[in-house]
Image (cartoon, rainbow, N blue to C red):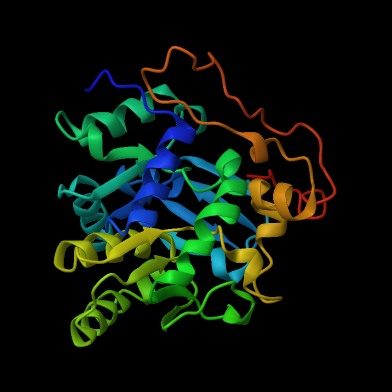
Amino acid sequence: MSHNVKTFSGEFDKFLGKLKSGDNFAFNRFSDGELFMLQNQPLILHQNGFVTGNLEGGGRYPKEEQKEFIPGEHAEQHKRLMKAFTFRKEGHYRGICAKEDVGSDNYKWLLDIVGPGDEEHTTFANLLINANYRRYVDEMIPLYKERDVVYVVNEAADLEGLPFKVKKDFRVGTNCIVNNIHTIDEVLEYLDKENAKDYLILCSASALSNYIVHEGYKKFSNNTFIDIGSNLNPYLGNNIQGWKVNRGYLNHYWMNSGSAYGDRVDYWHNDPNAPNKSTTPILTKPNKFNNEFNIKTK
């Protein structure tokens, strides 16, 4: 692995610069849910709780966040995700979980899968959220107005509140990693038909985003693909409300909740300034956003 130290703000500056200059790229984020899938462990988020690996817990997840990955039954999803994670091409960047989120062993496992020689194209999965989110809203989102935007997003989303125009949207539903696998081909066919060049493809579709970013950039690298996760959810209307209780960085910014995630900075594995323990302590008491549902804010 390289000895270059990446910083949370420095990596944001790098991708912001690419957007400003029109340099096309792909940002493919692999968060904690994708980690479980890569390790071929169960991942289930349902209305009243979750299963992640060997852990089970209570909670409430709205339809747009519900998913189910069962090892063996969903072998094709696992295969596609591993291909996306290990894909190497100039301009294709994978974002990986922070050690503070998943622990040292899982973090090392991810770095080992990346292997030597491609750390240049590895960055933070949380790059566009947490402490970088204010800058994302103020500096990056305005740049979307300058591009032809394609958006892969939940069927319940209302796009009228977005601060930029969407040229084409593709809608997905509950458990889209299984039920909307056909959307990959639909997006690719659209880009081919459009003879797309310098389009901006935004994806908010769980691990389906990973497949689209990977396969899209593989074929159409003269466009930019960004897995944005949930970071536009507050713009998407009254039918997308789960962020208010389970996305601390969003309710920190939009609702002034004081969530620790709003100031959370991630550290690279070789950063001498990295703390010895998590920069975001697990919440030990409910706040006004998570006590109704009895779940941990994240």
